[in-house]
Structure formats: structure tokens, C-alpha cells
Amino acid sequence: SAVISQKPSRDICQRGTSLTIQCQVDSQVTMMFWYRQQPGQSLTLIATANQGSEATYESGFVIDKFPISRPNLTFSTLTVSNMSPEDSSIYLCSVGLAGSLQETQYFGPGTRLLVL
Amino acid sequence: RKEVEQDPGPFNVPEGATVAFNCTYSNSASQSFFWYRQDCRKEPKLLMSVYSSGNEDGRFTAQLNRASQYISLLIRDSKLSDSATYLCVVNLYGQNFVFGPGTRLSVLP
Image 1 (cartoon, each protein chain N blue to C red):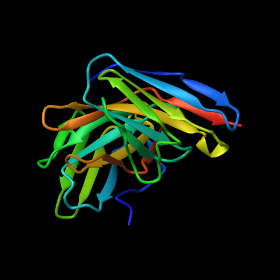
Image 2: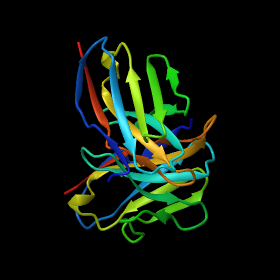
Image 3: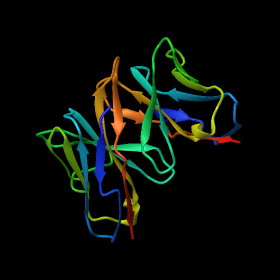
């Protein structure tokens, strides 16, 4: 597995502001992902963070709202822009690692965001 | 139909009980399967991969039925520490992981 850290671990923000979440991995990884987990819900993939190119967004998520950077193979950021209370959620980064038979994903500890 | 479906529970079982969770998936071309465990206010953690022949890891047994598009997780001799939400995850090779809604388990003393 990999050691994945996220900063901040939690934040309380005012509506209309933006927050940038950082994800750091202790080894180089090809695949990095950003998920959202709303209260009482399962995980929803926001986008795949691609090193050296634009992120690949899932249906319902757009770059203007969730800009993502991936400057190298160990680091990525997700920005939640122009926040509203509906953005209150846990944001998780994950990395894909090759297992013995199939690729597996490992998650960072998450960032708890509350928007007032 | 949702891509991955699970019984949300909660399953409340006494210590030492055997409990089974089921999961169905809609895409017959799905190629890899996993069970993750998520404790309250924590990130999901890989519990075990699910292989075609079925596999066991201690008290945990995972089964895959491709014909029925069905995955199961069996927990034997359940412990208090097994209390968590269990997420069924399906991956279409080269595509993204799809997470089920999770099944909540409470093991009671």
C-alpha cells in the first residue's frame, strides 16, 4: 500500500469562498483520484487527476467548480470553488496501485468540509 | 438500475455470530471486485479482493458469481471490532471503481 496524507483534515468555510485540498503520497503513483462522500452516502468519483494534463471529470462535475492540479506523481490538489452549503462533504483522494492480481485503490484520511 | 446495489442494513448481530452480506452489479463486463470497510468518520480501507474462485482471509470469505452478477462477504465468529460499513466495489478494467452504498454492521456484546 501507500501512505497518503491530506491537508486540511477539516475546515469550516463561508459560502462563496474557495478551499484547496492537498493530497500527498509517499511514493510515485500513476493514478490519483478525487472522491466526494456526502453525509450518509457512499463515495462518488469527482475526477481522475492526470499528471501533466487536465483532469478527467465524471458526469456532474466540472473543472470550473472543482479545478484539480497534478504537478507530479506524488501530489495533487482539489479546489472546491464558490462554495455553497451543498458542498459540505468529505473529500477523499485515492491512489491506484497494482496488486498481486489486480489494481486496487487506497484512500487518504479525507477532508471534512462544512460550508455555512 | 444502480450499478452496484447492497442491502443497507443495519445488520445487528451478537458477538460470535456469522453474518453474510450480498452485493449485485449491473455491468456484466466488470472485471475486478473488492470489499472495503469504512469505520465511522474514517476513510474506506481495503478488506479483501474478490477472486473468481472465491477466497478466504481468516474469518472473512468472499465469493463471486459472475453468472448472477453477485458478490458476497461472509464474516464468521464476528467481533465487536467488525462493526463498520462494508462497501462492495466493482471495477470495469481500465475504467473507474464504482462503490456500492454500503451495508452497516453492528456487532453487539
